[in-house]
Structure formats: structure tokens, C-alpha cells
Length: 235
Image (cartoon, rainbow, N blue to C red; front, side, top):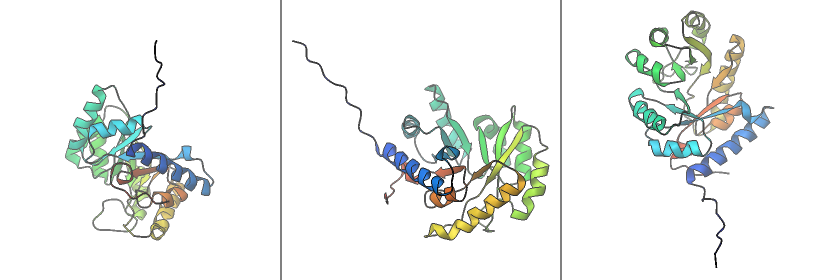
């Protein structure tokens, strides 16, 4: 007598659960600001994360991944390509001019253009149009890269003339604070600057403050620890 066995869905992993929870919170934050969650791209930051765990996040529905270092990203991207997995790759860390050539080859999006020289180097090495964001240091922190708010308009005009560099918006890294509400004015200022320049994207918000960033208009949030790390789930 043949025995039939019903197939059971695999148990969700911690990465699955984390992504599901983050997406729920993004949806709630977007709704508060009268937007749809479809307007917000979740970029999973995979610095120090193995290719296997990146694969797991891809299987859980993440399509965009961010890396901070070209030399760490290259073997990871190659390994995933060997599995015929081709997500959208974002460069989210500081980019040195001497790494512009491999960055132009590896990444679909460079979020961290923080000087005209870097933009020129990317342009010189790009064989196709690369989407970029201009990094803005709104808080004037010496430890962070980026343009001052008042310099963005003239820099945008200069960089927009470069071949193969398509400026899509602005990015910022907010100061660390225990209370995300403390950085709401930073996110609001970046949105107002973006609007005044007629650009599309706002990349702002990370694990500790992404919900406030979405409420203030973020179109991209860059989240690593809340997906891959030891993160206490708070309701």
C-alpha cells in the first residue's frame, strides 16, 4: 500500500522573519506619510555577510544589496553570478578614486559620490550609464564624508554633465542617536533639498532610524544589522 506524504513548507529562517518584520514596519511608516511601501526600496547591507546568507536573503525576496568595500563585494558578486543570481548591487561605502574602475564594473548604483573627483573617476571608467546618489553631510560631522548642503546644487550641475553618470538623488548618514526622533530634522532637510533640486531618490535611514526616515520620505533604506545581525525585535 502506497503512503502519501504531504509536502510541508520549510520553517522560516531568522533572515526570513527579520525581512518580513522590516517590510511590515516600512509599510506602516509609509502609510503614515501617505505613501505606498512600493515607493521604498529595502537595500540589504551585506558588509561582512557571507554569500550564502546573501543568497538566503535573495530567496526571501530582497532584490537590492549594498556593499561598503569594493574588494569584499567582488568575490561575493561573482559567487552569486555563478548561481545565476543577479540582484541590484549598491555601493554604499566611501569610494576611493583608485577603486572607481572596479566599482563601475561591479555596481548598478553608487550611493556614495562624495566629491567631484570620485564622480569624474567613475565617469572615466564606466562603459555604460551608472546611477549615482550624491552623499550629503547635513550634520557637518568630520568623521563622515559628503557635500555640505549649500554645495549640492553647483556640484549637481557639474557632475550631471559627466558622461555615464546619472544622478538620481541624494544620500545621507544621520548622526547616531538613541532616539530616532532626534534625527527627524536631518531627514526632513534632505527631503526638502532633494525636492528643490527635482531629483527622485532619497537614501536615508538604517537599522536604528529607518522608520522615521520612511515617514520623512526615504525612497531607499540601507539595513544590515536588523536583517543579518543579532537584533532585538521590538514591537
